[in-house]
Image 1 (cartoon, rainbow, N blue to C red):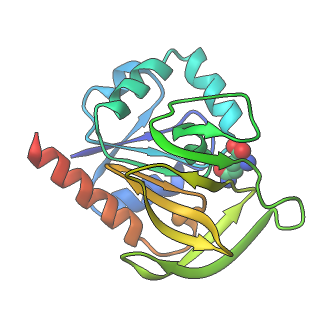
Image 2 (image 1 turned 180 degrees about the vertical axis):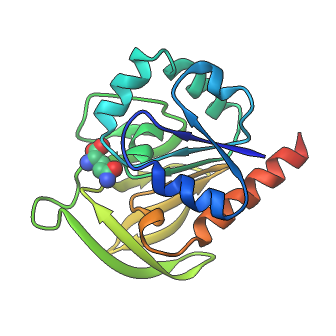
Image 3 (image 1 turned 90 degrees about the vertical axis):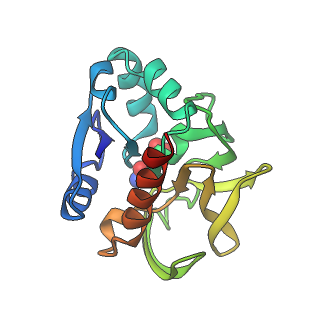
Length: 192
Ligand code: GLN
């Protein structure tokens, strides 16, 4: 089983380290041919505008979108969540649009640009959350399961095989979300 980690920009290395520690192989996604053998996708944090631009320049955008739309499990954090979202409230860009939610970019303002908190996450209990110039989810549509909120703002959702997180689970020293994600990947692979 191989996990593709989008590696055009941003915080992909930490995800790779965790996935490898769990015993799975990672493929860094930088071109269309990297998509062939993967069973799951991680979209890391970073800068969504830069990632979106590079995805188009590398001619990776359409094939990656198609792969995600086919139902492959996706773990998207922060900028990755923005790439997945159907609507971005304060940005004219649209990317994959496979996750039926509306997000607001850089939603915590300047003073709360980065912060850490531990909050309840559905199915996990207490979970450490690191936010870095993070978005939050303003609204969700049918079929989206809200997994967590911070101060009444939605910060974690699952829709079918797509997990969208406003925070960085790879930085909190807790690998349970990655474990859950590889389980989804195992199930998806077994069902094919
Ligand atoms: N502020 C970034 C964006 O809007 C996201 C920040 C992150 O991924 N940590 O794309």
